[in-house]
Image 1: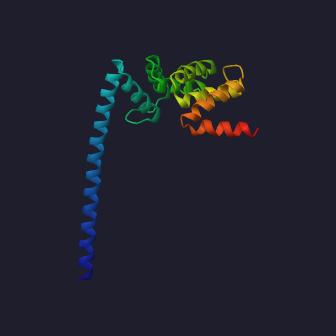
Image 2: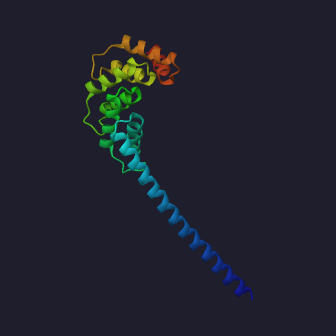
Image 3: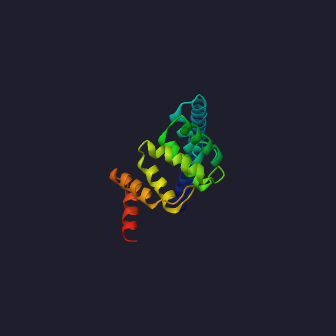
Length: 171
């Protein structure tokens, strides 16, 4: 009798496990198809020149979220959004050029894009531009201008800029 109960319990657990696996496969299939639909809608909107969708698509390609991970496509869409004047995208494509992500490493282009983003007041772009001035990456070294950019970014609450200021004060 004990063996019979154990057999029924094992069969029940097995049945529940099979049901859970089947349900998970159905949910995964539906999520995948929903992600495919969202990605294709995002792509269509980005191709029409909608900047928010260009940015979202760039981030999706960079992270491999809903689309295959592709640094070149991420760079393409960030550049498109940057060319429309979006400061965050200008900063992102600047970073891509600085690091050589999806594009050939090009410090002069990184400087260009950071400069555009910083001129719009984007604090993180001011930090990135300041770093280029500190190290002379894509531009002649200019510690005074770097310090000015760090102060401006720190005044907007950017902690990285504040840390650069503190570090420079102790050098």
